[in-house]
Amino acid sequence: MPYLPYHEPPITTLLSLTSFLLLLNTTRYIFNHLLYCGLVAEILIGIIWGLPVSGTSLLSLEAQSTVQSLGYLGLIGLVFEGGLETDMKLLKKSMGMSISVATVGLIAPIASSFLLLVFPFGEGVREGWPTPLAGFSAGAALCSTSLGTTFVVLGEVGMQKTRAGTILVGAAMMDDVVGLVMVNIVTTLGEGSSKPWPIARPIVASFSLMVISIFLAHFVFTPTWPLIIKYLSQDTNLEAPLGHSSSQAPRSIFQNRVSKLVYQIPHLGFCLSTLVLIIYVTIAAFINASVLFAAFIAGGMVSFLWTLHPDQQRDIAEAEIHGSLEPASKMFHDYFRPLTEYVLVPFFFASIGFSIPITQMFKGSILWKGIIYAILMIIAKALVGSVIYFEYFLKRYQQSSIKMNSQTPPESQQPTIPKAITSTALPTPPPQHRLSLPPSPNPSPEALKPPHSTALLISLAMVSRGEIGFLIASLAQSSNAFTLRSKDGTRAPSSEELFIVVIWGVVICTIFGPVAVGVVARRIKSDS
Image (cartoon, rainbow, N blue to C red; front, side, top):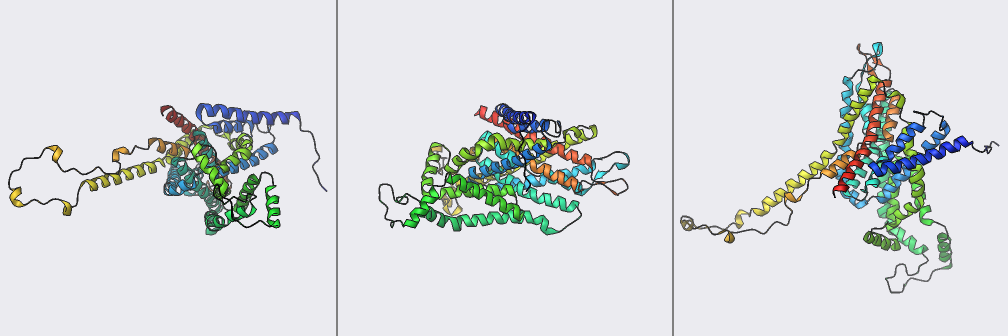
């Protein structure tokens, strides 16, 4: 029977891993205090310690592959925490805005990427111009929003519970689901296939998972979960009002044994929460839905189930009053946070650094195209702020209309004056005797403040592309989607230069977004 013999790791391996972990956390701490963008430091350490710069001299290929896998676990944990922390009621109210922000954030980068068709790529006989398929594939790589970066940025600037943060989470989630669809579209079109089901399957599966979860939460768990808790509870006065004795029937021996057995399980809340997360992620992987979207739904489901416990409802109310952690968030903070914050999430952002081909990006003909394309993609994604201003001007117009209507009484209510009286010149009454209507209860248009800070923060936070951008770009290159059209009209093979230009866009956007959000957040906090 095969087995893996145990060998003591060499001291060079131990020192490399130790320095890697220490540097990830140290540089993140420094960058967080300077610019609120510690994840940028982790990406830079990944570039230096990984294949792009050091090759395998500091970390072996197997170690880098392991870091990549563990980092994805950290990303799942990060999104799971986002589901726990997100106010679902506020997300429901802000869903229309989230859809609008996500739609603009998807359409603008794809439309702008067709400007690549005017740039020549390659040299000599291999010179050509990108095809429409190549332009669409480039836009698909740049239309996504990094979920991991979004949640880290929200945590660093303290926006998780705000309306802007909720809109941002909803939009980033939709971008993630659509990003998976884009992966299938680009791969399918690059291989020359046009079957509709492989393209539509991820979004259908993800939407179905969400609908089924909502159905289970409201129609299955809401009536049954409190009964299960009451049956298993060792507190006979669980449902009794404070200061009154319970009138429930005596507990049977079997019920006592089951209750004792369940409550003897150590760390029960953590175990059940982890089980829910594993179930959701596994189902999503098998049905080809978004694993990250499933992790977010799992976090929301765990938070919802926690609120159904009678004891926890009191704890949640006290947490809202005192500003402390709610029970579900406290569970994550006690069990998950030490591992995710200091090991798994830094591994994730370092693995992004592993994916950046830094040594190939500074060729003259590529560099200027990459920078121009990155600036174009920053502007395209930042257009989502226009949605916030559109809502502001719409509310301002509505309030202005309400004020005008409230100040103009209907004709039937206006006093009528006989002609004989009107023909006589009457003295104008003094101002204090003129008819005046009571002030409108609606705030005046001037009471609405322009949402400059909110629009700017959402625009900049949506700029970061991250993991999905690298994934789509790599798959587009491997599936021959970055094709060129030569001068005589024939198609050339997939262009390495075009791929590097797209990578430039992903890299600059991934770094620029968090840095810009950090600078703006610091400025807002210092002004307030």
